[in-house]
Amino acid sequence: MKELFEIRNFLDILSKKIEICKELLKKYFIPRIGSFIKLANFFAIEKYTQKEWKDLISLHYINTTYQLDKDVIRIHFFVNDSITIESYLGFLTLRNISEPMVILSHIFPNFPSFIREYKNKFKLENMQFYMMLYDKSVHIGSEELIIKTFPFYSQDGVVTRCAHADIMMVSNYLHHRWGFNKIEISDIINSYSFYRTKPFPSEGLLIYQIAEIFSNNKIDICIKNREVFEEHFIEILDSLVESSFPVILATKQHVCVIFGHTLSEGKKAYIIYDDSGYFTNNILKKGKDFFTIMSRKELEKLLDKNSYIIYPEPQRVYYPYLNVKNALESYIYQFFNKEIIKKSKQRIFLVENTVVKKFLYDNKVEIRPKTVKKEDFFKQNFPHFVWYIELELSKNNYLVICGDPTKHIFSINPPFYRGFFITNKVLGTLSGF
Image (cartoon, rainbow, N blue to C red; front, side, top):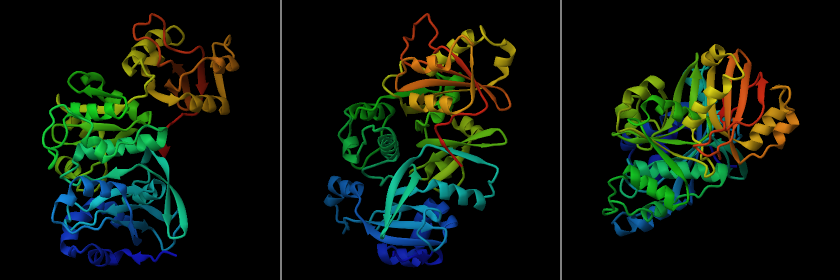
């Protein structure tokens, strides 16, 4: 059984393990993991082998005078003194280097427990959290726990900067969720040639260097500029988040990863990871914690003509969001009252066709027009992902239409599959808490 320590002894024990004094840890490190310290009552600490730290050593730190341990320190956090999935808040890893601003490496929260305690601690019981997560196995002593998480990575400041960290977070998630290629640190360093300069110390990455890195690692991405897509910029972002595709938000000050949203009293906010704390502290003025919530108003305030969203998109999506939205209006008015449709709340997002079919098959739905049979709908040819269009006609009354993302962008025919569905339930790709 792994020994658990009380959280009040955290700095005393950690400072002995990593040979950094408590005062420096308290000043530079603790603010980055504020959520864990506030939510946890117990922790466990151990040595752990981590590929990313070995990569950093071989790429750069082996050429320095630092005396380094090839292993990292892994710290597990718990609500109570039991190693159970209900008590487990997640873990982080620390680089074994005598620099307090560099030690933080990875964080893997167990979000079902983390959000439960987060809502209680900060009195957010009425706020709903919706997040992109995948299952990860964690071994603690003789116990195996399966957590639901989204990976966090913190830059070291020399080999990796904020953009490197965001690429690693996004690709790690995509790899585990859908089998995309996982991009390692060495892949990033060796995957771009555009405006290439001395790699260490890194000065960060330009937008088009980020694009080149994703492309050279076989991950298709799109880039949208706020100045070009101003009217639709945030709604495109919303569609991506609903589709469970993480978004790298790039402003002139920083980049961060958006991997979910919240809802409270009908108002939406965005869940973000900030690898360095610069964005959350210097821009949002919310401290340096790795995890925070950004309201739509805060997002709109920081956006300017130099803001971008960078995001992955499945290869067989040729009919983009704005085309779907424009085609929908002229199509739907043929069948439903124009005023009702105009007033309805809409969600347009990508969903795996198996998820759509299961949702519509398992739930009580009414299909329109009556000339279309339910089984005929399921017999139609679907690509891996389909556009899922949901219109809220009234409370607990939703109109559902599915669209073909493989349609030609200049097609004169609507991209929608035959058959509308009326249902009293909503479909979601995000994990809700």
